[in-house]
Length: 111
Ligand SMILES: [Zn+2]
Image (tube, rainbow, N blue to C red; front, side, top):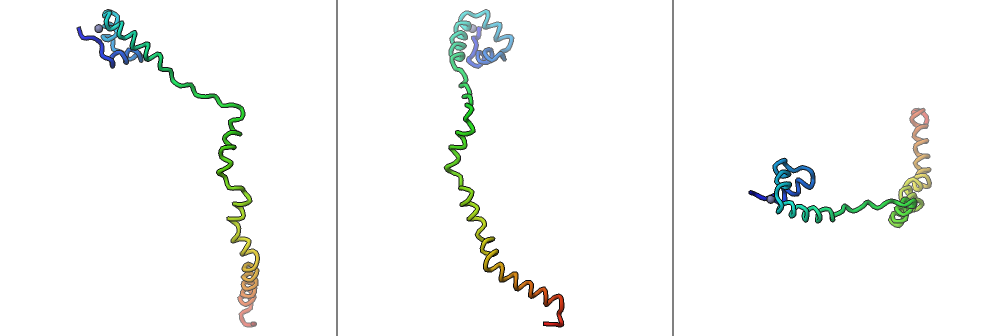
């Protein structure tokens, strides 16, 4: 008589064993004892419970992220320096140029 392999025992444990294996397990004292040990050790392995999140979980995440974030004012200053530059000196000059050009285009004979 061929005894159950570890794989066959595992199949029975996860309720996927063949009828032949299950019948053997019932009939064979040796395999039954072996399976009992096998089952005990597998039962001892409990899946780790997922930790529950506290009410302040969002706050904790924010605290961890905060140090890595660039403050808004700093970021705004970095991304908008061109606009300030163009809006100031260069911008007003080019505005004057383009309005003169418009006048020239509107009446090409005068000027
Ligand atoms: Zn057996």
